[in-house]
Amino acid sequence: MFQSSFRFTYVLMLLGILMLGYYCTGQGENTTEESTVTESPFIRFRINENIQNADEDYAKEIIQLWKDYLSSYRYVNEQNEYWSYETLPAPDYPYISLLLDLINARNNEEVWNCNIIGITAVENDFKLLKSMFTQVDSNTQEVRLKYIVSVYAKETDTGYRLHSGSDYHKQTLENIKVGNINYVVHPNHTFDVSVAKKMDQFNTRIANQFGVEPISFDYFVANHTDDLSQMMAYDFFSFSYQPVRTGGLADNYNNIILSGNNSEYYPHEVVHLYTNAIKNGRKNFLVDEGIATFLGGSSGYRLDWHIQKFKVYLEAHPEFRFDNIFELKEKYIPNGEYLTDFKYVIGGFIIKKIHEKHGMEGVKRILETGYFEADYFQMVEDELGIYKRDFENYIREEIKKIELVDKNELDQMLVQP
Image 1 (spheres, rainbow, N blue to C red):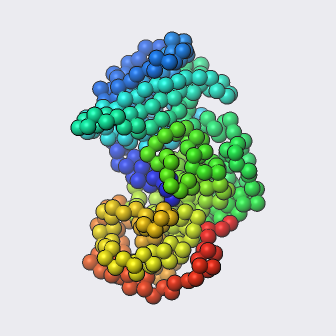
Image 2: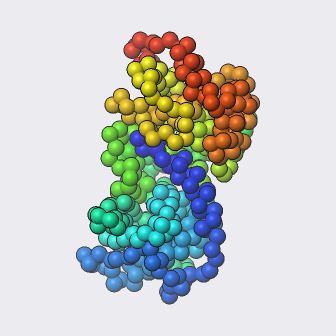
Image 3: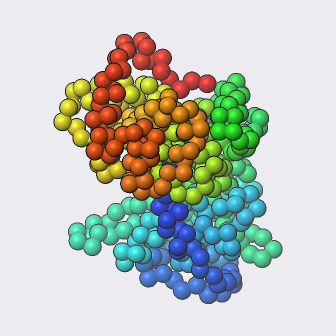
């Protein structure tokens, strides 16, 4: 769903499109008074004995609603009766990481534990339900903590409905409108309206480049990824407590940017909103991330900065192979910075070469590239005349032509508003 150390949105979106489209078509009705959903054999629910209000009617109703939803596997479903659709078109999508893991567990016949550890009243008549998800390794019996998440609930005329952390915090935190962007501001963050105006200007400019109308969206802004996780209602998940506490993601289903970069300016993720609007559904990973990195930089730096880092690494490590880039196990250039993702810089470099040859029309055209590896290399052959067998050598030779810059010039290659 996060860019930088917190970037996982694209992999999740692709998996979500592939998997949720199949698993979330089930029908059937559910009432909060008496559950008609069969509890999943692959999710073992437990209500923590320290919850003092677990026997209150509202607590029992909300807990059952959450259990029914998770057991239904009807995730990201427009007809889902468990969630409120008043403010978000895909209200459960913010939990996509958890949802996909639960689907994978079911497919692999693995049992996860959902320990409900608290329910309490919060602002604006909402109730907060907190759950801890664990998995027991079948070989070692090791208990692995997977997630600690909060989900919110609010009563309606027909019973309680669930709300995500994004929905709840949009309704309870300060909102500041700047042009086409609605900022949702974490209380620890000092809002900079001048930077927000430049983000709005970038939004208009990138819309013109793609030849579409500017997109209106919500922008959640926090100082770092710990605060951002709180806004997303994740107390713990697989990307918590990374070495670099910056990053974010684009929720394309709900037109939301989530930024833990201490900035109102996040062009990489804004570009993703446009690539998704132009080519909805499955997109080729290297194409989509390449375009976002080419037009919006990555981890706070322009593509040229990452190319410089890549060039230094290639010169120091001629043995490094990336001819099979889709199966590349290494994520970041191992220089201790955790900022340059190999696939982002290589993908961005290919987009740069296509833009030099074909302009924005070529960039827009390749959004139609198929999802699979073969589709990507066919696109590179069609657009640049480079065969898959020559892919790595082509990039190496082109990178050699780029001159290394000094530290002062390198430090100027920031993604600046």
